[in-house]
Length: 419
Ligand code: AMO
Image: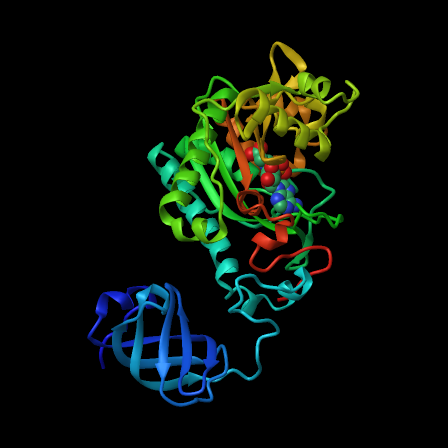
């Protein structure tokens, strides 16, 4: 059998007899000819058939034929004299036309039909951007001497707060789905000094919002031997720059197709203290956190004032941060923590952590549930800190998707457990 040629490579084979395989993206019957547009992972190629054929859209086919140049065909070439073999026939047509430039269906319809909706070139493009981003994150942190780790997602203790955790039955014992690899990544600083993890985390989010999922992908990192949170912020800057650059190089076609404007990552991302941020947006100075509207206003300010689509907010009140957060030694009511805002939303949370055993005993009312975690600190831990970036939020902001579900393959939320 002649070897398979990808659709995008067909124009390089003019005059040759080749074999392509894929899905019929579109079938157009004219009086004397039928055009089949075939779709594979690389793109589209047109096949010209002398007579009508019964090949509905989304049929999986193999086509052997001769490549000729054609101005009117996508890519400037098409396949003639075809022998079409049906590899798999669809049981029913898709609920929307995949060949139209935009998928015209409501979000619930798209999500209900995700396995087929994801085949739309623009849907797929969004997820190639996600894949390129992950590759860029990995490359940037590998370059900085980080070790990739994989930690348990079934855990005995909640990390972020007890409230939004999913409980499960674990051989008759109470267990939880991990809300974050927080405790593990900190412990592993004691082993590798620098670690990162790319994996699922679970949040029992009772709110139906456009930026919260019950399961999302967390890009975590943790590093030892820092002076304070600014060292962590500098690493995060490199990770984000690596992500943008990988999207530019590895997902260039997707960027083009979606018309994406990639952000510039400034050499030093501007920062603002939480107290100043509240004042800037005219919020009550006693507010413990920033509201979504404040985050949007701060992002706009950063663009105006610093020409940056990224902004660090530092120094959040320590009482609103998790117990492992390190206070600001100069202002103990504030923390050495930060959020990174990007295009109006919180994309990353991070900070410096407590690293002394005695400090943990002082902040934990009942250390018992944390016994396994605290072992690391009994045996010497360096000053350290880290961060976590929400992957689906990142892509949503890059592609300007109003709802995080649009950049999640198979979203899990309050109402959705399938597909
Ligand atoms: P935090 O809980 O702020 O911090 O989460 C970090 C980042 O994860 C994303 N995110 C979400 N994305 C989708 N759906 C959700 N329900 C959701 N919740 C959070 C956001 C957020 O900025 N352990 C700390 C991180 C650290 O300090 O290292 C943590 O998990 O983009």
